Image (tube, rainbow, N blue to C red):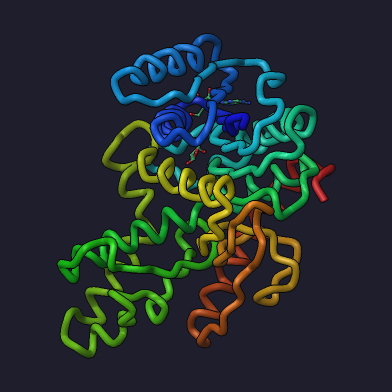
Amino acid sequence: MARKKIALIGAGMIGGTLAHLAAMREMGDVVLFDIAEGMPAGKALDISQAAPVDGFDSTLKGTSDYADIAGADVIIVTAGVPRKAGMSRDDLLGINLKVMGAVGAGIKAHAPDAFVICITNPLDAMVWALREYSGLPPHMVVGMAGVLDSARFRRFLADEFDVSVEDVTAFVLGGHGDTMVPVIEYSTVAGIPVPDLIKMGWSTQEKIDAIVDRTRKGGGEIVGLLGNGSAFYAPATSAIMMAESFLKDKKRVLPAAANLTGQYGVDDLYVGVPVVIGENGVERIVEIALNDQAKANFQTSVDAVKELLDACRKIDAKLG
Ligand code: APR
């Protein structure tokens, strides 16, 4: 049986980490694409030389030619610029929109059957633009944000409760930004919702509110510490989990930026919701009843995404 093929568009900090993870897990053969000459080939060669030590047989190729992504089963897009200290994700919009134009055209021409996961920020707008530029069916184009945001939330909750991260589940909705909506009623330790844990004296509402706030600003905290660039280990791991759910038809239920067609009262917009990812891409959008507070917060998030899409349309009138 032929190996699967994973194409990574953007071979920077996240792209390189993705290549290492995908190869080590033997998810398939890896193509690293970047406009920077030589760099993707250098990273591919470096990782391939770890193979004899770690014992993986995936092949890695670096390239600046879109023809090399032909036949890719999964494409993960990180092309563009990351933010620097003091910048918001939205500050990246103009430059990264142009990058999505080029990447979308490359995918359309060479790998129109792939499952595409976008990571480039500002995420909810860039994944929408990538879908528009690539012309792929909406269920085959998805944005990675929710798995990362909920991982951050789980990390902080596990630390607060002093329990294993494995036993903490978290539920995060909305856009990838300061308006994201961590929903504590659906976040649990071994099935016990966080509000019940507060009643049991495991924490206080104030502490949980502070954790929610830290989760919303989780990316910025890392940008501030790194001084140059943004998070890459956890974002890469999160996208790999989504890719594996597709490649292995695991049908995992994961939060992701998906194209809504009426769910949650939202039409034709990408925003973070729970989805089922299997061999057919986004196979189902999970629509749950929200309480009034969560509904209002979700709407604020949706409005913020709408503003970004309007800004995209102003830059490129061809966008629908
Ligand atoms: N086509 C392909 N690659 C491109 C293009 C393009 N048109 N424009 C830029 N790139 C490449 C750059 O050469 C660089 O190697 O994208 C890569 C981005 O890598 P980094 O600068 O290291 O950024 P990274 O930390 O990987 O983040 C990438 O993901 O989380 C988001 O906000 C983050 O938008 C940023 C993206």
